Structures are given as C-alpha cells and as structure tokens.
Length: 471
Image 1 (cartoon, rainbow, N blue to C red):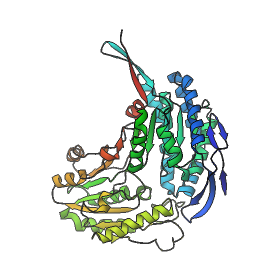
Image 2 (image 1 turned 90 degrees about the vertical axis):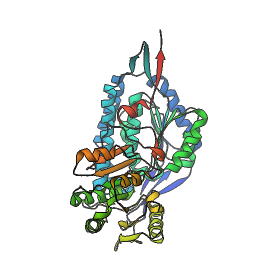
Image 3 (image 1 turned 30 degrees about the vertical axis):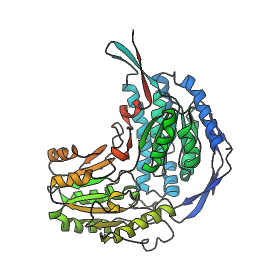
Image 4 (image 1 turned 45 degrees about the horizontal axis):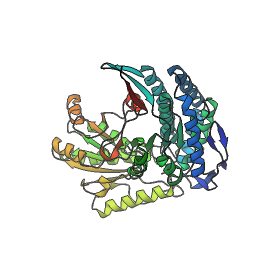
C-alpha cells in the first residue's frame, strides 16, 4: 500500500488543505494498492498564486536557460524509465508494450520541445514591424488517465519552452504515476512555482483552474463533454485554450490494399491501449466486395490477440482502467446487439479466467450502419465496428459523417491514391499504411475533437502571444 498525502506547490511537497482520500485500484484484480489525499479549491488557489509569482522572472528567461531546464527534466525522467513503466502497468493496467511506449513518448515530447525552442524565432520582423512572441502567462494543465505522464511531460515541456509556469491537475486515478514524475521534476531543480501539481477531482481542482482569472491558458486532454465545460468556464476571462478531445476515427481500407497486412494493422489501430485511446481506429471501412475476406481475416487476427496480465510482454489488451469503464464498455456491446449489428467475435462478459479484473473480450461488430450509436459514439474500449462501402466516394462520405475529426487511417497499395483520399478526410492527422507518431508535427482535431494543436511549432505558439512593436 502506497500513501500519497502531499501535493507540490511553490517548489515543495506540502500537505494539502483538502481532506478527501481516494483509493487507488489495480484494475487487473481490483485490489486497493494505495490512497491519495486530494487537494481542494484552496490548494488550487495557492498553486495558482505560486505560478503567478514565478511568472515575473521565469517569463524573462532566455532560450538557453529554458533549454537547460528541459534537459534536466529529461535526464531526471530518463533515469527512472523502468519505474515509470512498472507503475503504469500496475496502477493503470496498461500493457507492458504500451507502457514502455508511453514512457518513451514522454521523453520524446521533451526532446521535441527542446528542438522546437531551438528553431523558433521569438523576435521576428513582419512587414515593417517587430513582433515579439511573449509567454501567454500561467498555464493550467489538465490531463486524463490513459497516458498520464506522457501528457503531463508534453504539455509541461511546451509551457517551459514558452516561459510559462504551470498548475497541473492530473487524473486522481494516476496518483502513483504522478508521484514519480513529481519527484523527477523536483530533482531537476526547476525554479519554485514553475510547476505545481495538485491531485484532485475535475469538478473541484479542474473547475477552479478553468475559471480562475490568473490562469491565462488551459491545455486539456480528455472527453468532449468535459472540454466543452472547460471552454464555458474559460470564456469569462478569455483564456486561451487547447483542447484535445474525443474521437471516432475511421480506418479506410481501399480495394487495392494488401488485406493480409492492412487488416491486422487495423485491428491493432482499434485495440491500441486496450481501446482506451482517443485516436483508436474504431470504425473500419472496407469495400463491400471484400467484406467476407475481411471478416475472415479480422476473426483470425483477433483470435491471436492476447488478453490478460498486462505485465506479460506478449499481452496486447489489458484490463480497462476501472470497473466504471468496464461497465460502460459492456453497455455499448449490449447496445450494438440491440441495434442489430452482427457480432463477429467477442461479446458480453470477461474472458475466461480473468473475472477478477476489468477485462473485456476484444469485440468486433460487422454489418454496422454508420448511424448506429456504436459507430457514432466514443466507446473507449476494445470494440471495433466494421462498415462496408460500395465506392471510394462513399467511403470518404462515411468517414467524414461524424461529430469527430481527430485521426484517420488509409490503407492502399497506391501511395498517390492513398494521399488523395487522405486529403479529403476531415481529421487532424491521417496515417497512411502505418501506425506512427511524429512529436514534431501538429496534433489535434477537427470539429468536436478539439481546438488548437499540440507538438512542434504549432504547439509552442499556442503558449505564446505575439506583440507588435511599430516604430
């Protein structure tokens, strides 16, 4: 049992004013592995005041000073990579392969921030004027539970690169992971107030961050519903906002694709991070003429997807983060059956022998219509909907017929054709014949998948305000 009874404010671990204690649960067996004492509104306000005070000097730091802080941050985290991975497997239930990748993503995002800072011009000549790119102010960072430390590292490193102190509200369900990261950041020797971390609930700590007048910008990753609430709270003080929200990503396999490679790749895209990924390719669009072949290949592929102990190197799908999330996904599987979709594999209940944890059978529905709720709503679990199409134009129309637009996928043996299709999809990122991440390229969504972009120059400029000086 691990007890976390401190938050981090103004360069020190301090006891929170808040008294609520939450249990931390291992989702593989639903046993209690720790507790965390949650901060409250008073704690949040102290953290914001600390960051506001730090802004006066930190906003004046040079590129070289910020790069030095980022390098120290990187070094401190890199030394404890194995711990980051192990605690993510235990507390979150992330598979070993995904948790390792998530830790690497955290480090890569810091490197990306450093590389971007080296390249960006903070003072530019535009027309006959001089434009100064100045830090926007104190940043509120609110992150989810599905890749906690990776999200924090990306957002905080960007804030530091911009010269902005931050107040961070991680998911209270990720407190063990957050604790290790906080220790690393403390070791890195960042100036007092540059980062502050308050464990707490979204409707308490998150709400205070989103409405407090001394927060100039919010960077949030999470559900569209919560993102809209944050935007409403932020508007009174005209906060800048970056919102990376939900998705219902289409994956189009064109008829000229190599189906023996495209289908397994599509299953991987759908079930990544046990399906708890905003970019998961959960709508698989396939040519009607190849539907039977796809059904056979999907079933064969899913039969070889190992569900089980996330500590095992070959496990591809681990438990869902909580019993609540498990119940949510079960309700959608029942809904798919009620809507008349054909169950190809998986279904209700837990895989045999895994009844103690929040494990879901990897589930695939076929003969899905795009108006069904399982095809329109983000399920956030290992559930794939297969939708057939007659023509390329219809495939594009179905892909774009969604409230979301975060990521999309295209498979084709003709690279030029794949890029032509990719260019017609309403999504912030389109992956062609691959599953990759580029930490220098912009990431974010169209439509209700969010506002703004993260990573690289697009992400950094969201933390900067242009000031024009005319002589």
